[in-house]
Image 1 (cartoon, rainbow, N blue to C red):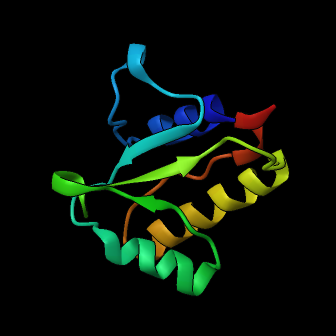
Image 2 (cartoon, rainbow, N blue to C red; image 1 turned 120 degrees about the vertical axis):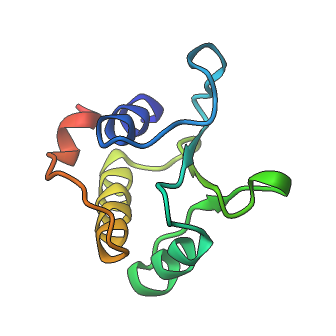
Length: 105
């Protein structure tokens, strides 16, 4: 699932925090696009009933983390990613339409 999350968000133009050789399969750290901060994370939780982890220390308000470990079903990850993209669009981020499911096959 981590590979799907990384591919989806990088294809949409998001930056990843970790260099390619340092990325984890348990969590993906994704940088916010210009003009977005943790207000997006709050809206995602409140309006889309979906939670992601925020950044800590000097990265607070600059990135979010998507967990991909444990018993999360692929269908749940797909739905969560769709909600994240919808919330970014609601915040004015211009994202191309993508087939989210295809990133997790």
